[in-house]
Length: 185
Image (cartoon, rainbow, N blue to C red; front, side, top):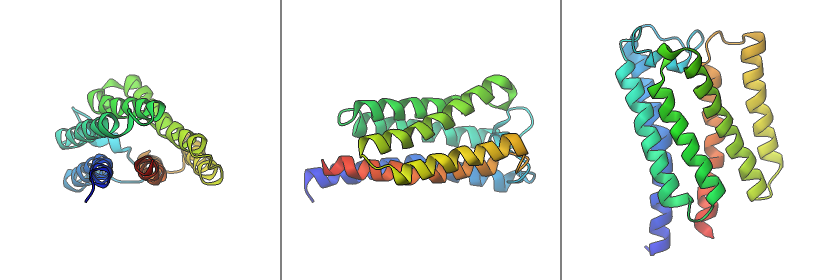
């Protein structure tokens, strides 16, 4: 294995770990909680320091994921693509702030969460601009906006868990493809 292919594999593994670790902790917290419902709750309800019996698990998962994604950004991205690397650092920092400013903080938590999801949507836009690919990023951004529009305007799914998970599923393939493309440069 060449040094370049090892470095590429390391970056792909870091990205995948940064995405999977928080999801595993979220899934475990939801399963153990005994009360969480995907339709009625936001994922961050699991992190409510006062009301949730699994807040430590949930918030630790977000914090670990943020640390791994920040490491991925610094080790794999910033030197090759400063704009995307800084965007990923900001996204990882915002993910950590969701854990720090849990549901107890009310409006601050909401603002940090919205900023996080906007940063993810921005990552899709940067992908489209950087790699001169328009169709899939445009479709993804429209889907992203539609999901949140339906949630906020029409209260489709009372809780935000489904839009939150769909947003992650929408952005993850772009992040992975971005990493692979950077590795090939």
